[in-house]
Length: 236
Image (cartoon, rainbow, N blue to C red):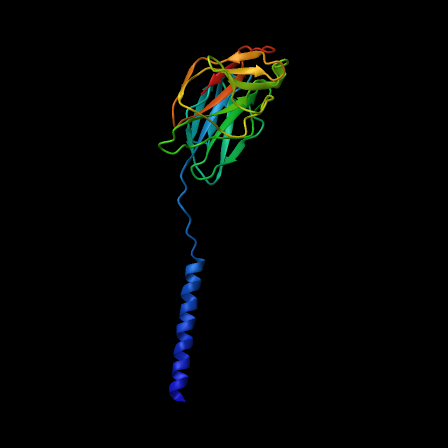
């Protein structure tokens, strides 16, 4: 009887120790290390010739109007503040905050006027292509100001040249972006933005050599100074 009691107590002690160790393991949270994210900024404002964006209070980017910045590395996994300024004066109503996932990539399109307010359009998801990807990828953004397009309000994206074809099935109003990336074989392309009703060419890009494994933003933007139906088509 004494032996059985001792064995019972020993078994109970072993079980209790096992539960304790298991609980300790389950309560230990291991967080994966976050990979910094990347942002590219497009200055699509109507009149801010050199837009300054201060990011996370630690770095600033100056983006000329109509152009896209180089990729800017930002922290992932927490809210990162973006503040607009022009010639040393703030031009945003509020600080914009974005939280990017690990290794996240986005385009941010700045829209508005330094005399009133500048804001970002909703983020456009950028892409990271694995090594060995055989195609190039494009995405289209109609970034012309709604106030400065009339007949050119709704556009389509085409390829011109010996092979003329419509590249995307959607039509785009100002501030709209294609829903996904479109694959193209590497090569030299000339893009056209065409009016959705009637097919008139609204703007033509210069010939652009697209490389395998790279992504490109094709976008319309108001020519300077902005005027009704005076737009350009650029590739970045």
